[in-house]
Image (tube, rainbow, N blue to C red):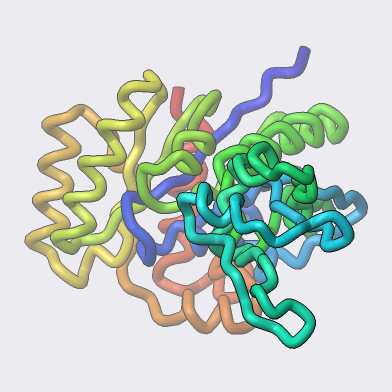
Length: 298
């Protein structure tokens, strides 16, 4: 079986430039599979513009639906609901009040359907979230869109990674690049589970260093090879040096330091990565060197 190298790119906090870096990697690599696992705020597709050839629904949970043909509006479900998702609204045709469900508050716990004496409440799958597989200019991409208000993003991340592995086998590619979410929540855990390498993108700020330490503590528990990139290092040379010193103390390789480059923003506005839109920009050769080191590091 072909060995597939899975590299997760994460960040302890948002705004470090993680997605910009993954977009550059995606346009430097040859025939990779890109997995956008930041499903709560997926935006990598805006740069890569995949032509989707597969699409599917993702069931993130269930919602309660009332059948008003059998509901007697007794209010028992409203009494038991801990999430204040069921309320009684006075309406012309319902002088005692019509039982309604606020789906933004509904947690899908099923309790209301169990206590209803008339069995008037049923649970319906929430399948508004979608996953996609498509071709982009350098390879293939798997991404998803979590419907507003829906949860279980960790499960959707796992689905995206599963599809990425299947796509890599079909395309006979040996590289999967994962754009993970910021932070240390369940989505981040799902993004690094099973990865061969983890690259954490940080920035020289107090919160950048603090969150770098937190996410590295998480990654260490998975016994995965850890690497760091310091983005916008020239915004605070002293903090950039502190981050380097901490990484050296923890024996975590710093693959590179990228200066603040406004052309990265201009490239994103053009829906391009910095390495393809402005290959002569200060950041482009550094990003290329970082990518080569990341892929070739043993």
